[in-house]
Length: 251
Image (tube, rainbow, N blue to C red; front, top):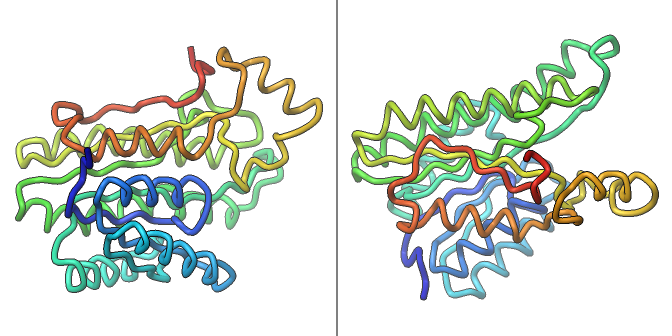
């Protein structure tokens, strides 16, 4: 059974990792996918993902767009509306980390993380709520992190951005609930991606795994399954929530 037949989803930062897994999962359930990437170095991966998505029998298009830039976000959503006709689902997944102790962190490093991780969620949400309000339906899914809940030394900018997403999510859920627009967040724990490649082997990996009740790192598929649930009508009475997908780490 396909849960998202003919729905249109935007997924930011989807050329790899969690974003790619989410785009593939939504497409497998019938959603047409518009997804973004930022750097020229990701263009080949984006083209390959577009082909994979189209092979699943849905419409799919890659857009080079920086979600942290308001004007680019506005252009993106307008272009998606012209090409696809609607926006039913928005997955705000674009994110980076620039880990450093606060004593060594520059203002530019702080701003880069906040703009990419948090401002992007504002930019994209502000653009998609108008067509969603017109349709009287929509699901916005914001990618937070377990670090946004617990904090972590050396990750103050990342933690602040991801904690801000949680507060933003709760507020938008309250603003948009009367319009049948839902807004939820996912807080991944340690997920095997390019960003966490350093955790895969050795003593560091064993140390982190020992702190996870399920005894393993998560996968992009683990996150994508929750995104599918939140995008579909199976979660029609869920809004304003943050679902931790962390193997029990935050327990």
